[in-house]
Image 1 (cartoon, one colour):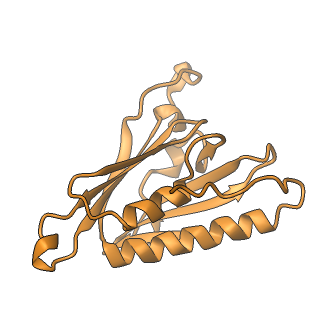
Image 2 (cartoon, helix red, strand yellow; image 1 turned 90 degrees about the horizontal axis):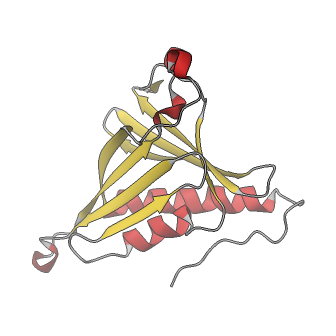
Length: 168
């Protein structure tokens, strides 16, 4: 599992190929290695998002690590269920030889939480986290995620046509 670590906080993302042949990402949000969101009130465990025909999350991280434009935003959204991830580049001191960093935000749909009697309704992306990473840490994470992705694909003999989306 690829991990973004910021002091006590950890964001884990694990890609896999699901039974439909789609790329599926599992997201874990941890504080001191314990789930941030109370498992007792979570309805859908774990938090997962599918990627069918959209841009690859793996490629998005790679593209972001190569960015040198201040304020540029990279966006990914899952097909089902709703998860949104954005990466914003901060490069204000790049001309002074100081490399930038990146804000990473992940939001997911409230469908993951128990909702009492109204348990079947879909809500909005109200719950999420934001973490800052410098370029070197994000490059390391991006490589870990790509390796996990490629390992998942290599283990899937039933879906040989699934290929990593390489953005230019």
